[in-house]
Amino acid sequence: MSQTFIHPTAVIEDGAQIGEGSHIGPYCVIGAEVKLGKNVRLHSHVAIAGDTEIGEGTQVFPFASLGHAPQDLKFKGEKTRLVIGKHNTIREHVTMNPGTEGGGALTQVGDNCLFMMATHIAHDCIVGNHVIMANNATLAGHVHVGDGAVIGGLAAVHQFVRIGTGAMIGGLSGVENDVIPFGTVIGERAWLAGLNLIGLKRRQLDRDSIHAIRHTFKDVFGITTGTVASRAAEARAKYGHVPAVDNLLSFIETKSRRSILVPRDASAIIDDSEQA
Image (tube, rainbow, N blue to C red; front, top):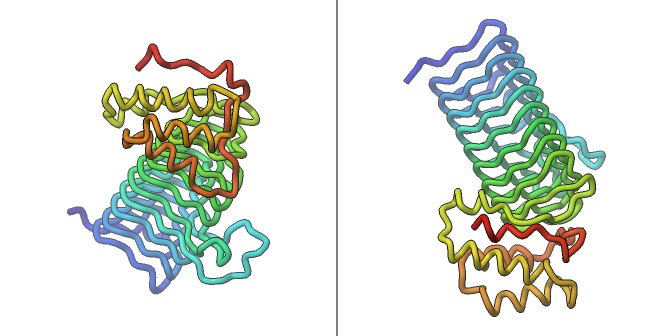
């Protein structure tokens, strides 16, 4: 294991914990409550404050700001946390804020994620593993992002929205409602356009499971009679025994502050069946 390196221009307050083998580059500023795991690399000019924990092997690039006070007018300096997992890549000018008392006091990021330049994770967000956020993508407060989701450049996600596992959000999309697992979302005011079949295949789902998800998608979102909830119940009776379908329908059935995002025109939803 490599030795710990701290550049002489770095400012590290008393009490900060620096993991073995970590590299602290020039002009970094690290607060007293910060905890860095093993082999964390701060390239230069990184500012980390508050009760912030960063897991093993994570890299942070210049001018990232992690753990500073959330951009919430209700925040009055209460004790809250930011926890970032292992082996993440956090690029230039990324900002991540800790939680707020009213939102659970925790912002949490999983492992093996890529946060490209100037992405923002607001207070009380929960972000899963293997998530990718492209340049300038933004999460408002209390957003939940499932494992393997991809959020395109300049996309903005409304507070309290849930982004399901494996969902793909197109660039410049304004996402105001919940996105189903493996849903594909496009549009300035985003709508549900289809399924992320590439993401399904990358998770090594078998052909029968992918077809069951596709049929469920069409049954729930490809018709306009009844409600989303009633159509989901009918789909569960037919396909609920398939684990991937059960996951999708459970997402729809879970209570949420936001509605489920639906197609702009149910009769014109993208048919990806030939790709499966």
